[in-house]
Length: 150
Image 1 (cartoon, rainbow, N blue to C red):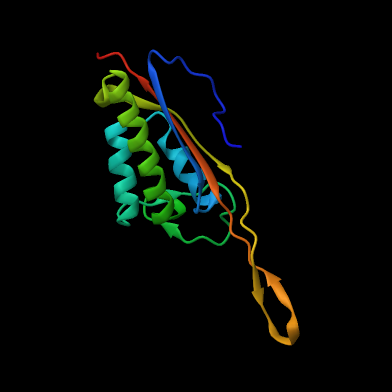
Image 2: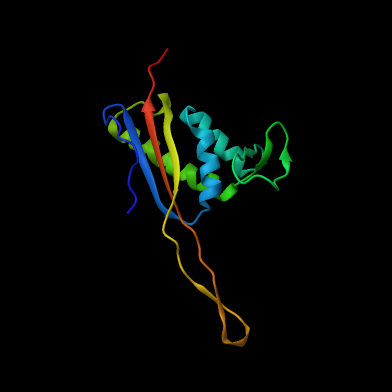
């Protein structure tokens, strides 16, 4: 079962969890890596730009055959992952509003993606055989913390 990986102060933070989303864990991991420390509005704008293929996401692992993107290096535009993370981020922001925190004055404390359960299936082949056709799922967690106005 999915849960949170980090303890947080409920007075100053809000959190949200996306469980077993049908998105690639590899893409989600790279997008979450870019979100840490961003303000909520900047993070939402970044995710929307990635979904519209305006801003590339730099990849740090398994990048041997990736084409270089302008000003980033090896990267991609993981649209499906960006939209899934955006939904979880908006959920965390609405949780902050519900708690009475200033949702505009928050930053991403933790953005993490972990492998979820594998949905097993089989694809029929010739001669009465079959091949595994499994789908990976992803658990996404986001924790927002309130920042003092300066």
